[in-house]
Image (cartoon, rainbow, N blue to C red):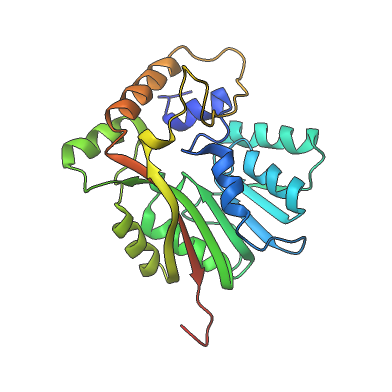
Length: 249
């Protein structure tokens, strides 16, 4: 393995629900949608498959999940097999999704887009949605515009080239051809951090690999430091948007 990344850390530790609010936030957001057995859902950057499994288990949706990281896909596949869930799992890049246009009713993305080429990935989400389909994208969001130095610090840990503010995210989603864009839930990182002393809050799920490279702990330490120092400057939002119908676009 070459130089280790934050994505490698998530894969090696098998972290599910790494985003602020975790799976509890995901479940709350999905409860607001009209999901049924015929709903075609795409989980972009599915990681270890926690959300895709929840969707298939709870709603019986037609779930397709994609991820670029081979270890993430392996752990997701093991999960789906263990739970006997009919989730279709594919290798897939958010910047170039391997599906025809208009395939899905709902595209769900959790803390993935910020690590991609935003212009490409947002257009891809819009492309694979059917007219009237819904995008739910939970993303890291700057509470105020970040300086070049701050962005450089974040890029050093996460590889992110930009962290938009809420207004900038909404503008980008609209530019990608989506409409009715709203930030339906959110807060600062500080507001979502679990409390180690009281045990309160949502803790991520872990499914660690054997023989983890010790170098990964340096990334974990840097992640913890950045989380603490940026906890009031960074936040998260759940953006909900709709693909327009041909008659109204």
